[in-house]
Length: 233
Image 1 (spheres, rainbow, N blue to C red):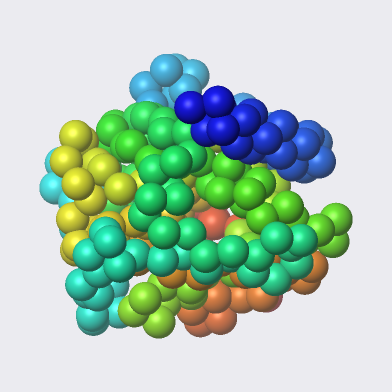
Image 2: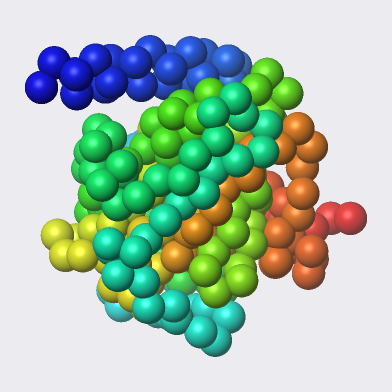
């Protein structure tokens, strides 16, 4: 028990150190700096409209993917973390469960114009997972790989936000395979394509690298409340 508490204490310290490194950049992101809402739960919409521009609300949860849905039992799930970090590692399901478990309610905005509001998630902060591998000072970006071959990316300034999670439950039930179970990333302050389903590897990078949709002309930054759907390049 004491050993477990010691490990959690070290992760909390590493979490705070990593967050403080990117705090100024995080607070300058549009989701936090604009007078627009974050889109995370009713109390964070600040009296603004429920939906970002161009979105419509759905009670269903549509499924979009590359055409395959990997079948990954929890006991065989692995998450490789490597790149610009001092302690690369591969997480097992047991490792994930040993981290602090959090619950959060947030909105899910798909670039194809639908939004599902108020999903109750259970999972682990991406920040905590990253803290365990001790990112190098030059680590500024993340590149995500999924078991179906999908890739995406975003900056560390987005990754350290407390509502960016690795989730394994949605609305009180295990995350369905069709939605990226057993574990996917969620990014409530960005369009949902930034949250990789069936996440299997996270690379920490000094320089940005575009993912699957970003290479095809979709926005690298992907802020729903700015209608930031496509690259301006």
